[in-house]
Amino acid sequence: MKSQFVLQVSALTRSIARGNRALVLAAALGASAMIAAPVHAQATKIGFVSTERILRDSKPAKAAQAKIEAEFKRRDDELQKLATSLRTQAQKFDKDAPVLSESERVKRQRQLADLDSDLQRKRREFQEDFNRRRNEEFSSIVEKADAAIKKIAEQQNYDLIIQDAVTVSPKVDITDQVMKALGG
Image (cartoon, rainbow, N blue to C red; front, side, top):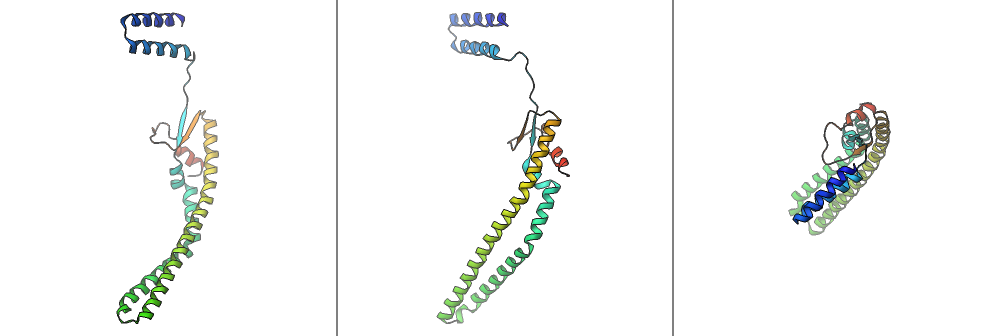
């Protein structure tokens, strides 16, 4: 190792003599990298898991989604009925507006506005409740997936497992293994 370092330094001095600063810097960096490099380089085993795919395609995720949709179906149907009723009343108002008195027109406009506000409020509450319930269900799936990932990492000697990346080689994607460990 010292002989390589000496060669690097001698090349460095020759470069200085020629005045080539870029080469001098490259040689110095190369020499320092050789000194700092570990004697036994070891490959790092890296894996990738797509959390999005697990939360979309795994059996527990599909079951949770179906369960949540069943829980909220009645409320969703009620919201659809309210929206249909509001639409029908608005169409009736548009048709009747030319023959209504000013006070009756203002009264019905206020009623329609109140119905619309009520519908919007109920939709917001529905969405908040739906999201809260969905997060509860999916957080347990994420916990189970994390446990499965740790088990796979230990069994297969992974040094690093990444979740969420811009681009991934299929060679390191272990999402299917995690989904299988979750039961689907």
